[in-house]
Amino acid sequence: MSDRAAWHLALSNGSFEDAYAALEGVVAALESGGLPLADSIDLYELGVLLSARCGGILDAAELRVSTLERAAVVAPEDDLFADDTDKMDDLDSSPF
Image 1 (cartoon, rainbow, N blue to C red):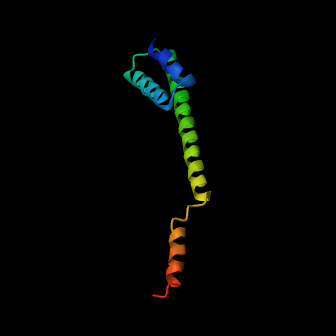
Image 2 (spheres, one colour; image 1 turned 60 degrees about the vertical axis):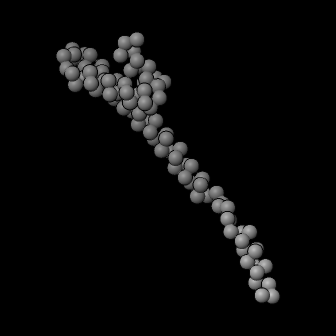
């Protein structure tokens, strides 16, 4: 499979790592120069799309993390000292 085919595959259904590696490949190809103008424009467009895909994946991950953080704050915390409080009440009623 050619680099360009792999880059397009990463764009359509690759993981973040796949899309990011493809973006790095596109940037390297553009920086190397020597490409015809039409190929450079095509690669630039692919790079923009890969960048947007990476950004979308990161946005989704950020939303997931913030949702988990909010759920952790909203969820009632276990009272780790509830049993100890009952024991302390027993001590207070002790004749000693």
